[in-house]
Length: 154
Image (tube, rainbow, N blue to C red; front, side, top):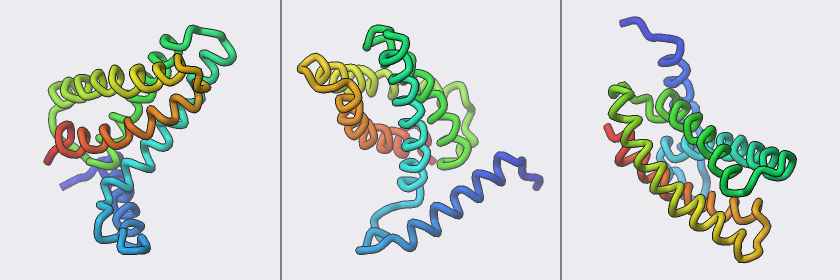
C-alpha cells in the first residue's frame, strides 16, 4: 500500500510524540497519551498564531476586540483542525461530516471560553492578552477532550 507524504509526516509526528511521551518524568509517561502531547504541541503553535493575529488586529489596526478575537480565532481553529487531523489524530474519516462536528465543538468553545471568559475578563478590566491566556487554558482542556472523544474518535 502506497502512503502519501502527508500520511508519512503524520506517522513520523506520532512516532516522535510517542517517544517523548514514553520518556516523561514523574510517572507522567503512564498517564499522558501521545495524542495529548501532540495536541499540546500543535495547539501551542496555533494559539501563538491566534495571539499574534489578535495583537495585530486589535493592538495595531485598532479593530474592536470582539471582532479581532473572532478573526484570529477563526484562522487558528481552521489551522488547528487541519494539523490535528493530519498529524496528531491521523483521521481518515470523511472531512465534511467530521468538520461539521468540529464546527459545532468550536462554536460552543468560542461562545463559552473565548468570548465568555476572554471578553468577560477584559470587560472586568483584565488586559485583553491576559484574558485571552486565561480563556486559552479553559479552551485547551475542553478542546482536547472534544477532539479526542468526539471529533476524531476512532
